[in-house]
Length: 241
Image (cartoon, rainbow, N blue to C red):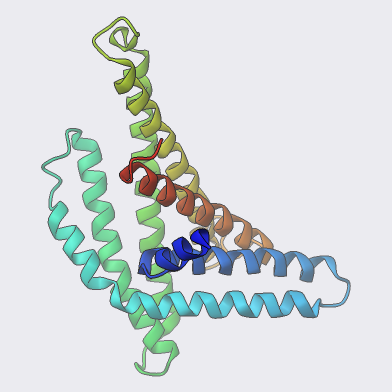
């Protein structure tokens, strides 16, 4: 009962609900894609799961119509990243925030065009929004790689021994941060693979992924996101890292 109450409480949060919808949608696409591909005749269950996946994706698109303000507030608060010690990380983050901020209105226009609210070519706006998402993910990948490199250097430096000024607790904190960056890197790479797939044909592997592979990449990213959010929540609540 306690677990059910905790889940119900967590689902009151928009971010938690969005993560769950995302994970469920990609899982349906993964299973549905496998069933459709392996059956000589189209699997009815597989097709139904793909429809569910499509509807859940559409649901998230609708909900993102209200994300612009939250993103704007975050971008404004971060500003030029004056609190960041690393200049390279600062500018990667600033560029990533700009890409994310521009992504939302582009997606809104594409959605409105599909819904016949605006009389514009939705394909161009979907391509632009996907390209901005891919750019944000690529910047996130570079940032994570840079952070992992810096943290590894910190751990391997002469000061990083147990007898040095770097205490065991600080060393553990660096290791936890490096693990978090690794998970973020894997998640961003999985999403980036899908972002490229959704670009116009002729760009790298655009349009080449079967449905189940898109579902697999999205499922990996979604589960890692849920895990990181749960771990961050347990740390804030005083739990072990």
